[in-house]
Length: 308
Image (cartoon, helix red, strand yellow):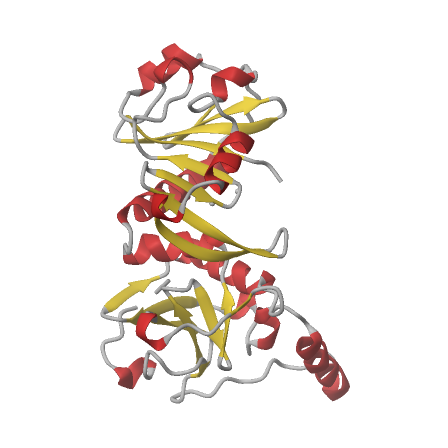
C-alpha cells in the first residue's frame, strides 16, 4: 500500500515558478526558544541536522491554521480534515532518500502551497507533474497520499480524483465506526482474476511501457524508497501497498465486480465484513486484505491491500 487556492495573480502568491520561500508581505517568525537562548540555538542545530523536510521549514504542524494552493490556472483549498496529509508527508520526507532529479521546465506544473500561520504565511512549491516539493532549488518526492490528495483537488486524472474521494470518505467513516471483528473469508474468495496481492504485484512488474497509461513517482517513508503509482490500460491502478480494479473485466469470487449492487456482493461473499457506507472490507487471515468500494449503491472499485 496507494494540493491547493487558485492564484488570482502573482501579486498574492508570487510567481508560481518561484522557489519556496516565506511570503514577502508578512515575514516568517523563527520558532520561539523553549527555555532561553541556549535552548533555541540547540533547537536550530537539531533542525539543521534532521533529515526530514518539515524540520527545515519555519513552522511546526500544530502552528498551521489553513493550507491553500494555486497555480497553472488551478485553485483549491485543502479541507481542514485533509491538512494532515500534507503535513505528515513533510514530516517523513527524508531529504536524502526522497531527493528527486530536477524537473524540466517544459513539463513543470508548479502549485504554490500557502501555509497560513498565526502571524504570517509561508509558501512552498509543489510540482503536480513530478509529485514533488521544491525547497531551496531542490525537489523531494511527496508520498502517495499527497499524490491522491492533489489528484482529488485538481482532477488531473478523473479515476484518481474519484478514488481519493472514496478513500477519504471511508477514512472518516472508519473513525466513527465501532469495533467489528468479522470472520475471515476463504483465501480463494478474496482473489481477483485468481491472484492475490503478491501475484498481481509480480504480474504488473512485468508489464511493458506501452501497457502503462499514467505513472507518477512517490516516496514510501515506510521503506525509504521512491516508487511509482501506475495506471494500466486495463484499468488496474497500482499504489503503495494497494492495487485497485476500476473495470468489470476484473472479478473476484463468483463474479464480484464493479457495477453490481450491495445485495449482489452479500450474496456472493456473505455478510461477514467490516461494513461502512462507502467500503466493505474483508479479512483474509488476520488482516483486511480485500475491499469493495461503493458509490450510489454500486461497486465502484475492488481493491487488494498488503498490510505493513
